[in-house]
Each structure stands twice: as structure tokens, then as C-alpha cells.
Image 1 (cartoon, rainbow over the protein chains, first blue to last red):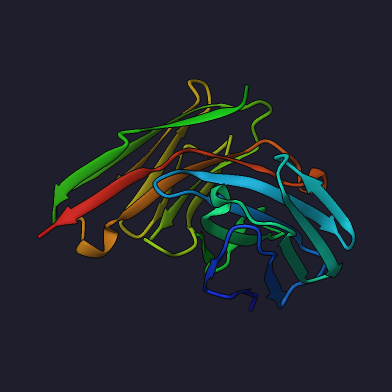
Image 2 (spheres, rainbow over the protein chains, first blue to last red):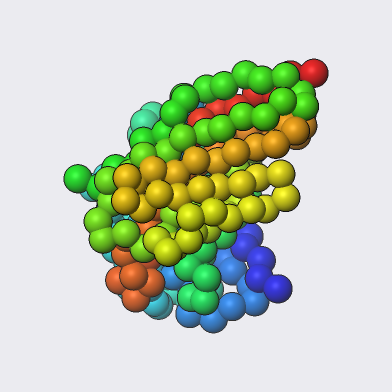
Length: 112
Length: 115
């Protein structure tokens, strides 16, 4: 069966510090991968998606970046965090068979 | 512009009662529609998925309907339980898998079931 992992679960960072969130998927190969952000009381905002290794599409211009160094690894990064980067970050993978997206447990990021 | 709108924004019901959540979408081309349940502080979990040729799909006490002509969907919850308290998100897909498979999310309906 497929499993998706995200870490860390929670993170508190000062403004201007770097960020690295990691997401890995088990039990599937060459999945589409996604990074979302959810602000408090708001809907999900797609940040990046990837259809293959090294292939990244950005949905929203911002100070965040994403990379996919391996087939089942997706990393979200920032060189300098802003207060507005606070939120709940979700990684997801899409099943090629069912076209359903399966979400990870999320990372709660607070920028102070 | 591709959009998904849900109503009501929030809903409070008593345990054991039924409720219906609404979703209207303007997504073209349309591929499929899903309902997700998101517990507080957790990632969303898929409840149902329907293509344009399906007009109803059940998953236990959850029943989703789809009217592709009017571009409306509903999620009916029967005999609600305290554990049904969550945000219910309507999601529409208009992008093929090999073009990214991007989804368009509604803002969600916050359901609170009270004892």
C-alpha cells in the first residue's frame, strides 16, 4: 500500500530564516506530487506540482521554491521566511489509476 | 475562471440528524468531482469521486450527488456522529493526469456535530 510522509510535523522559525520541508512517498512510482498551503480558516492553495524528477511547476509567485531530487521525494524550501509564510503545508501525491490525490499529515509552520 | 463555491460556510447540527452540503462549480473542461473530509490539523481524506456520467455515489453514511448539467453537487450525511465534525471540501478536476492533474478546491464547509 502507498504511504506519504511529511516532516517535521510542526516548526517555529524566525523571520528571515531558511526553510526546508520534506515529503516522501512509498509504494508507488513516478507519481505526480504537489505542495499546498492552507492559511488558518482558509482553503487549500496549490504552490507547486511535479510530474517527474526535476520537473517543477509553480502556481503562485513567492519566496518559496520546490525541488524533486528523486522520484518519490519532494522538497519545499525558502531562503528567507516571511511572516506571511505561516500556515499548514500539505504534500500530496496523485494516483495515476484513480486520479485521486492523497494527502500527507501536514506541517504546521509558524513564522515569528 | 475556474471556481468551486460551497455553501453553507459553516453548519451546526445535533448528533443523529442528517445534513446536506452544497457545491457549485464553473470548471471547464470537467473531469471529475470529489468530496474530501479534513479533520482539524490533518490532511484531507477522499470520501467520494464521481465522473460526469455518474450522478450518485455512496460511502457509508455519506452520499454524494452530481448534476453535470447544472454543475452542482451535494454531500448528504445521514445519522450524523460527533466524529463527523470536520471541514468538507468539494474538489473539481479539469486537468488530465499528464498535464499535472491539478485540482480546484472549494473553501470548504465547516461542520460541527453537537451531542
